[in-house]
Structures are given as C-alpha cells and as structure tokens.
Length: 456
Ligand SMILES: *Cc1c(COP(=O)(O)O)cnc(C)c1O
Image (cartoon, rainbow, N blue to C red; front, side):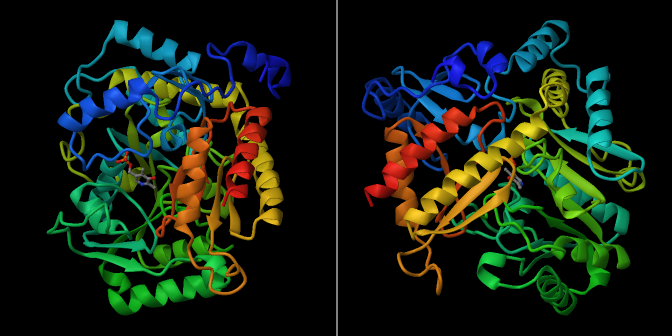
C-alpha cells in the first residue's frame, strides 16, 4: 500500500515503517526458528506463544519480524497498542520522562504524572461525580484491587462474575474466570466466595436483555443472596469470551439491581476501554455508570500500567497504606498514558474506531454471504469478532468450529496477517487493530481471510 491509498494520508506520511504487508520467508523464518529454539530452552512452556515469529520493530499497524516479514497487526498485542505501535507521541513522552525521573515510588515521594492520569481517568470514565484512581501494573492487579476496595467498602465478601468472563491470572482472578483450561488448571487452591452467574449471550440464548437479566439476578439471589455480595465484576463486552455483546438493557438491569442492594458494580474495561469501541469506555454504549472501572491494556500505548477508577467515597474506604505497590503508576508509564489520552483527542481516534468497525463489519458480512461457517459477526467499533460454526449448523445447533479458526489464523499468518482467536470454545476470531490502521490495510487483510476460507 502506498501513502496515497491511505484513508488518512496525513498520518500515513508520518509512519516510519511502510504500512504494507510483505512476506519474504516461510513463516516462521529461519531467524525466528533459531530464536525459538533458544527460547524453548529457557522459557517455560506455560508461557505459550500464538505465533513464534520474533518481532524486531513495529510502527502504526505493521510489525516486522527478525526475518524482514511485515505483518498487518490485527491484534495490537491484545488491544494494547490502540493508538498504533511506537506512536510518536508515546515515544516522545516516555523518552522525556525516562530522562527526568524513572522511578521514585509514588507512595514514598509522589510526582505529577500519576495525578494527571487520575484526573484524565476521572474525566473520561462514565459518571459525573467525584472519582479517585489507584494505579497498578497489570489488569489482573487492577481487578484484585477493585475487589479489595469493594469488600472494604461494603464489609461483605462475595464476588459475582458472569459466565464466559475473563479477569486475569492471579489467584483471585483465576477464580473469577469462566474458563479453567488453561488459565487455572492445576493451580488451586483458589480464592473462595466467587459466584459465577449465567450471562447474556444473544447469539446462543436468544433472550432479550430483560429476560437474561432476570435469569442472572435470580441466580445470584438463589445461590448467594444480595446481602452477601460485595461486588459484581462484569466486562461490558466480554473479551476472551469471544466479544460477547450483551442484549440491550441487560447490563443496565444488572447494575440497577446492584444499586438497590448495596452491591458495588465494577465494569472490567481492561479490553474494551480506552477508545477501543469508539467511546472512551464501552460502558457508555450500554448507558452504564459503573461504581468502579478497571483499565489496563490500551491505557499507556504499550507500557505497563493499569488503574481502578471509582466513586471517591468507595475508593477512600481502604486504610492509608492498604493500596499501592512498588511499580504502581510508574512515571514513564504514566507519562505515556497522558500522551495516549492527548492523542485520542487530537487525532480524533474515537471516530477512527467507528470507521474501522464499519469497514470490518461490511467486509465480514460479504464473507458471511459466501461462507456458511461464519455464524455471527458482532462487536462495537474496533472490537469486532466472528464466530465460526460447523457447516450447516448456523441456523440450528451452532456447533463450535475451532478447526476453521485454527486453519484461517495459520493461513493468515503465513500470508502476513496477524490475528487473534478467542472464545470459550476457541471458535472466534477477534479483531483488535490499532485505530491508525487504514481502510486499505483492512481490505487487504479481508482479502487474505477470503482466500483462507476458500481453502477450507
Ligand atoms: C487482559 C484482561 C485482564 C487481565 O489483564 P492483565 O494485564 O493481563 O493482567 C482482565 N480483564 C480483562 C477484561 C482482560 O481483557
């Protein structure tokens, strides 16, 4: 692709790596194969790898491996480099901060960047009330802290979660995930007082939001009782679960029930937040005003940072010293996060997320008309997924077709397109491209998927 083909020529001119797909070796290439051999000797097998190509550099929507192959990146490190790889604003802010102060520990001697990130999160999360933020290092740590704070505030212990949810790999969050293998298999004992209720899953349950909410609430009332629930933690769009978008009104009804019963409602926006869906936080699409929001992944352009933002009175319930950690809110990561917020606004990236959603949805609909293994296309903005079913079952049993996903992702990788799977049954392909990707690159990638499906 040349600059003139880009939907955003001004941006295209500033890319340091040509925004085009180019495969020059077998995938993985010889240098990646050699690196992978070294890695297998020293990195445990529990740290799995989707595609063993070793990346040397990246910019915008393109990653380049050590063999010189250019991949269109439709995963963005699982929705992390949302404003593009090596975004110049992030690189500049982080570089400047590295040279000013790299670490003090905010709970020893603080610095402005942490405060600024907290101000930005207060301004951009839903709800017009006083909010406070604690910054930590990872999404799982954010979820852990949200639960800690909700328990301290309510003086209750129960944690409600939804089927097909995903919240991390620490001890508490393993207990909160729907899927055991591979996240928690063999790693017990697990944290207790976690309750898994049925979710809203319109493609499979056919329920309206009101019907699904009734079912979820009845389940919580029977199985644990509102009185013992400190919080409910729910993703507005379930990420690892396969971009399950709940039926209209479902989450609102759930939150209303929480509010009536003194239960803290926590939106896990680690995957769906930070402009991904065309809103700063996906809760907005559902008319939700959560008591607490967790963010991570896309917040700092690739640097490790996560946060819990919530109503001031809830966030203030922990005793001084009860929250924090050595690296939490590191100044370099915080400076990068400020640049991310500024770039979302200056480059109009909420609109770009919507544009990407339209291009992807239209292109995937064309494929669905050709291939009956595409059972469902869903998602909002630049968070779109397709669910694959066995041939002829789309109108009836909707049998999961993980084999198609594996074949298509392998074909795509061999042809220079990096894409992620998802879903409890591994039968979903999810698109989480960076918001600077052009329509031309998306169309190029869609052509590769078309060719991949034609081989099946
Ligand atoms: C990725 C993710 C997490 C865990 O974040 P880590 O940074 O990997 O610990 C939690 N919740 C959701 C919704 C996620 O997508």
